[in-house]
Each structure stands twice: as structure tokens, then as C-alpha cells.
Length: 254
Image (tube, rainbow, N blue to C red):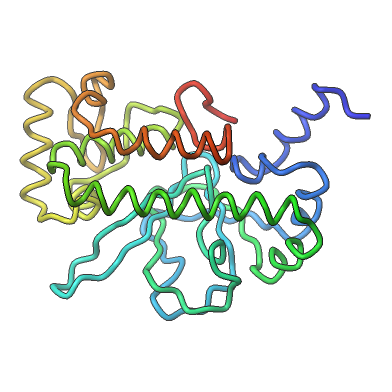
């Protein structure tokens, strides 16, 4: 029988992805032989619209992926960020269906890859594994609903603060977020000048500084106060449905 220390060591030997670490021992064993590590750089393409979804990508550590929806004016609008709390590709569907959005790597880092066919085979063998991924799909849908509402009712400043805090949550609460003005504008669905104006306001108030290719947060408490409560709503839902999976400052490296 595994002791608590043995169980913790076993979980820490897995890829640094909270969803994979949430699985019980037997469920993870169904996936482990087919997981392969992959280092991805920022802006690496995972899927284009219409591509067959044949691989699940699990962001690990500070890596982030994002879903982008093309607009008629040629701009891409980002919908949700996915970090080590989850995965992209083949989670909601059963795989081999065409991707609807473009999925790219937002922040580079380690990923774990898994063929969708192997995930589906494992789900057929384990009700508990199927349940965990169904719960994660529910959490992902909640993120999408919240993002839609956020874009409709909250100011650009509130949403900018929300995205920066959200990125910090998923990068071990690091104060330096590798986010450019252009990337923030894409997250907000606005022009670069609007994003730059918001950043300049927050900079003038001493809340953050801008660096080449990054944002340095000087006062997280003040930034959190400027953000809408959408992140908190998503975290609350994750805690109800998949406790301990969503990265927070308290949970750190779950």
C-alpha cells in the first residue's frame, strides 16, 4: 500500500499538468505509456480551423495555449487561455473532427502530447477517467461562457487587468508576464493603440511596468482590484467541479 509520501512522489513524477496529476494511479497508468514530452515556443501552431483533431496537448508548468477565432476584418480574437489546469484538442469532441478555431502556443514551455485515439480507448476502460475529462470539458465550457459575458459588459481596462492576472496565475505567480502590447490587444479584441493606452494608464499609477516583450507587475493587489471578477467566477467553478486543478497563488504547483 502506498504511503502518503509515496503517493505524493508518484504524482510529482508525472508531467507538471494539474489535470494529469488529478488522475488516480490506475487511470494515469492507462495514459502514461502514450504520453510524449514536447517543448513548444510561443506562437507555435497546434491546430488550424479544419484540421483533424488527432492529438491532445497538455500544457505543463508555465506553458499556455490559446484559442483564437478569426474575425471578418482579418483579426484573430482570443477566447480562453489554457494552462496546466487543462488541455487542448480532442477534449470536448471524440477527436478526428475538424478544429473550429486556431489553437496556438501563447507562452512557450513544456507540453505533454497524447494521441486522441489512446485517450478515447482509455475512457472506454475507465468510468472515473471519463468522468474527470467530462468535468474538465464542463469547466472549459464555463470559461467560454464567462469570456463571452466579459467581452460584452466589462471595460477594456477591467479585461486587460483580468488577462494579466490570469496569466500570472498560470505561470507560478511570476511578476514578469511575457506578454507584448500586440498579444494583449489580441486577447482584448482591440487595436494595439487601445491596449497600449490601458497599459500606459496602469504604468502611470505604478501598478506595472512594460519591458521589451513582457509586462512587470509591481502591485498585484492593485491590479486585481482593477480586474473584473470573471477570473474568480471561473476559479470558483473549477473548485466545485475539479477541486485543486486550477492554478492559484495558494496552490502553486499542485
